[in-house]
Amino acid sequence: MNLVKNIKKIARDVLINESLAIQQLTNFIDDNFEACVKEIYSAKGRVVITGVGKSAIVANKIVATLNSTGTPALFMHAADAIHGDLGMIQSEDIVICISKSGNTPEIKESGTFPLVVPTLGLALDLTPPPLPMLHIFGEVSGLPAGSLGHIVDAEVGLRYIPIRFFTVSAGYRIFDIGIGRNDDVAQLTLRGPFVGMSFRF
Image (cartoon, rainbow, N blue to C red; front, side):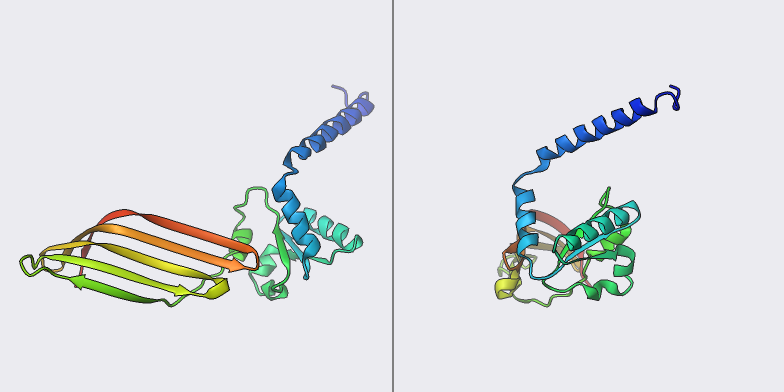
């Protein structure tokens, strides 16, 4: 195709294709979209948008649009976030991460917060007199944190110790963690039977 002779046709084709792509976006207007808009509209803080590379350029454009329409917003480069600027984000802010793949290291890192949580627990270990190599055990530990959530780790089962230091165990385990903030709750529950072997010194 001769580019110079077909400039008008190429321009029309581009606009037609882009308009069709925009029409397809209507398929993504669902309950999740509505919930996000409501959350941004009712937020007491700012909308913080982050990204890397071309996503950062898109993020800056969205920030400019939000500020011009009355929604306080700021751009934070994901690389800057993991090098000291994360403190700019306040508890009432909403963070939007833009990434094509979702695997950008800076995006993944800026959303990772290592946390050590101490827990309290009880353990019961019974050995039937006729079977000194067999142990019946039950363990439960956790931490209730009120409206912030909870952690529960419990298991029951049998331990067989055929020789010193070597243990074969089997039982049932439940691990449940819930983290909440306002109306947002993240819940993870793992449960099921297990079999394991261990060396104890």
